[in-house]
Amino acid sequence: MPESPESPRTLVLWDVDHTLIETRGVGRAIYDRAFPAATGKALANLAEISGRTELDIMAESLRINGIEPDAVTVGKLAAALVQGYETRRRELATISRALPGADDTLTAFAAEPRIHQGVLTGNLREVARIKLEVFGLDRYLDLDSSAYGDDDRSRPALVTIAQQRARNRTGEIFDNGHTVLIGDTVNDVQAALTAGVRVVGVATGKTTATALHDAGAQIVVEKLTPALRELILNR
Image (spheres, rainbow, N blue to C red):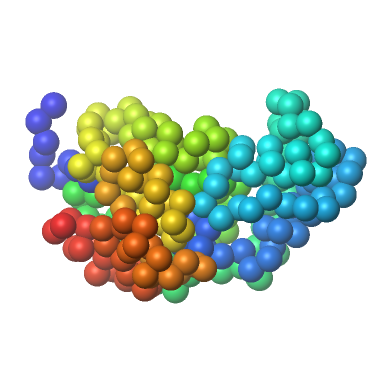
């Protein structure tokens, strides 16, 4: 299908936590409540979560707490997490926040017809939706042209999933040269490089700009700004 000037030609996939929002402890509190609700056992240890998929995090968290991560138990924990976020929307709205520049940057990207925006996140699909809805960021993003932490345990595999979903939604073929992942961790950068797509590192989380650059990010910025749109389109 020939491209028109209005066709979305670059698929931009945003990470969520510490790239667009930060939960400021609310996410951990929800995990602490969801774990015993799903397993009958208190959460003594939580797996490292930065840059990982929720399937991976849940499996390791269950295992290190002495529980076999079979499909039934993982499913119960996932359902408890979604319910926890659903019932604590007000807590998210008052304690958590959208990161500075997130709304303006997404607005600028949404105004550019050469860009189609989705997310690529380790969050469960419904958890990501709730987080983005709480801060009104969902209106800029095609959540059906996206990939989530309950689609696959491997973060690089999520890139292909998102590309296919975006193709199904738009009719456009987003090859690796026209797919950009934006994230705040070394794992985000490594996932993009493994998948063969472009990557922007944003030093809005715990990872420094230097570390993101050294990991291989082609563009690194200290904060979110509408100017990032032109950096991506002109690179």
